[in-house]
Each structure stands twice: as structure tokens, then as C-alpha cells.
Length: 356
Image 1 (cartoon, rainbow, N blue to C red):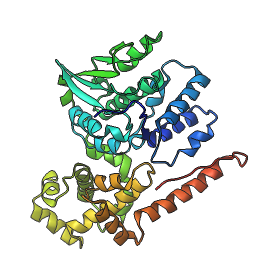
Image 2: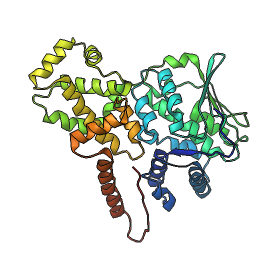
Image 3: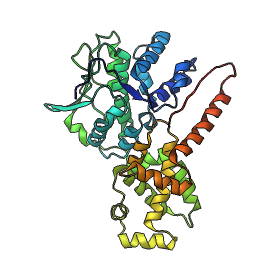
Image 4: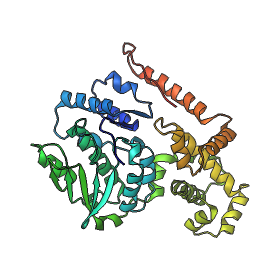
């Protein structure tokens, strides 16, 4: 897909949250413009570049993008993060990253190709005149850091080379220590080369990783169930992962639990439930968790929950809560904005919009 030269694009709102996390960690004065984008689904790429440049000028630290990227969590990457958590191998996670990369930055498609024995992941169409070394390094480091944190052993990610378009950096040793491979500057495109043999590297089990991220409300649901057991927990985790992969039919879930369909149905019947009712309970719990993330659109949430149509998701949510997803999110975000104001001095004139 060709991107016009005058098109710069937008970035995913979670990146603004990531940058705020860095400011707070370092106890730096937070720019009003950074506050103002905290609850936006997307914001302009130029603003992202300028916010990074402002921070770079203030700190003048080598490899600042690598430092920021070390804070990345699934919530900062939105649907890419949530879907990658359910991947079983490095290759599957990269394909998910490829499929949804434009949700992170829509100004340039991610290109994946084979270069002899290496998989090439590149951003060749990012307009060079509007990118900076910092925007480039954070784009590559975000992907690397997230994948690195997802594999079973952080030292198992073996990159072959990393290429940057921008001129040679005097701190090249810092980059090579971070990426643990050869890093070249002044190249034709921003690129990561990974041995094809690495694609079979196993990731952390999706149910364990998802549990850390999404099970806070799930625990409350389990506590309400009569005689909650390990089977309930296994079932809930199996449905969570199944929803992520769009494989949540009872036949698939029963197989994952080493049950027959009839055994699973009988177990639920003893608790006065059907499989459909249990799945809808979990969907409702997951919906509320996702709606708390202001950067996820309703379309993305419906996709994460296994709905083929956004309208079906919205109807279901209204049946569960007597509210539309927009109303529930609006009330939640309003509460969060009020709490944020309480956390900051009254002298700070901060306008924090939110977007549904």
C-alpha cells in the first residue's frame, strides 16, 4: 500500500499513557499536552514526535527510546498486546503484530519478508523527514521489548541485526547491548532481522499471562459461584484464551480441559448453569475490563470478545447492564478524570478530554 508523501498519520493512544508512565517514574514535570491526550483513542503522529523531542531535549540521554520501551505493557499496545498474549510461539506473535500494526501507527504499514535465513520486519515507508532517531528506536524497541517479555526466557530472543535509517550514533555500544546483536545506522530502512529458526520459540502460556492482566474481576466472579473449584478456574481461563483466538465453542473448550462435551455440560448443570451462561458471564467481565482502557475502540473490543458484529456486542452489553458500552465507559472515565484532578495541585490548569 502506497502512503502519500504528505500523509503523516496518527498513533495509538496507549503510547501517550506509556510516555506518562515514564514521566511519573522519573518524577519529571509533565507537559500539559501529554495530560490532554491521556484518554484519546488516537492522537497525531507529529504530536507524538514533538513530545518525544521535548523530553529528549530536556534529558539529553543516549538511547532514550530504549529506556522508555522497557516500561511497555500489553495495555500500551491495545489489541496487539491483548492478542499477542494468547500466541503460543514467537512466529504467531509476530504475525499478529504484523496484522494489527497499523493500529499502533497508521502512517506506514509493517512489512514482513524472508531474506535468506532471516525474517525481515521493516518500516520502509515512514516519512524520513518527519521521523527522528528517537521515534524510530522506540518503534523497534517497543516491539522487541514486548516480545522479549512474552517468551519463556527473556534471553531466548536472538536477533540477527537491527538497522536504523538515521546516521551513525556515537553510543552504538548501548544499542548493541540492548538488542544483543549487531546494530547498523545509516541504512536504507528501519529493520529487524530475526533468524527463521527463532519463530518456533515458545511464549509464556496465554492463560497464565492473561490471568495476570485480566483476572482481577474474574476472581470476583468466581467467588460468587457456588463451590468454586480449580475446574472453575481452568474453565474460565480456557474461555479467556478461546475468546482471544476466536475458538470458544464448547467443543474446543472441553477439549482444552480434557473433558468430553457431555462431562463439561454435566459439571455446569450441577452449578445451575449452561455453558452459554458461563461464557456470557466471562464476556461481561471482560467487557468491563476492556472498557476501562480508553484507547480500545468498541470495534476492537467486540473483536476481542469473539463477536462478528459490533452491533451484536452492543446489544449483549445492554442486556447485561441496562447501559450501552458508551454510557458505561463515559461514567467510568468521568470518575477517573475526577480522581486525577484530586491527585494534582489545584494550581495546575489541566484540560483532560476523553473520547468514546
